[in-house]
Length: 304
Image (cartoon, rainbow, N blue to C red; front, side, top):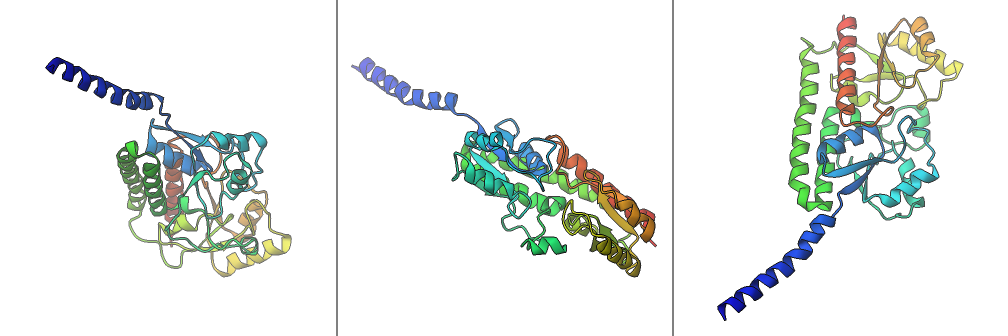
């Protein structure tokens, strides 16, 4: 009798355990769509080897001018969720999602509740760009986005939620150290009279890490060269405001930049807004460190 009861209990236990074991064996890791390079690095550092990051567009394309291709749109049908910048730097993703097999796919708005700066540039405002979308060029904003992403991925994948959260904390710690190491190279804050300009309206977030403001932006929009009249006006403005430094584009150089350097008597320092090249886990840290070091060098070499 007792043996019969024990056997029935064991049989019930096995029956209950088998479906769970089968589910665990068959469960696939999340496939997470990524729109921009910084977000690939964020997500890769959060999920480790427990999910798969899938770029929506191939490496080497300029996301500002990207036009979705059929294969890229088809790829969305294989994804579980897409991580978005969501404030103007990956508008192409909306068109891709709408045209895909999964128009209702889950999305993560990385910049939810992240403080945003106003958009600059005549063309940007004319196109309805209210905010500056380059939040990933701020360490503080990047950490906020990493936390947002980790929290939302944890909701979709509860079994790994604590793992994602811990990885996000570790990653944020490394990012804070990047900024601290850069600031430690400066023995004093930049002089209030120290003014900088940029070729592209991307670097307001970055220079604010050093207490600086962008005085002028040369391009009316990314990749659009200023007209001769606009260029002359900009050069006159740089003279009038005593701008000494222009942060130029490393990945998308412009031919007219040398004219500005010559006519305005400014020094050029190339930066990257981390939106070009291969997608890698380390890319954001490597390129952001280079950006921070470049700003430090510009301040040191031009501080009165």
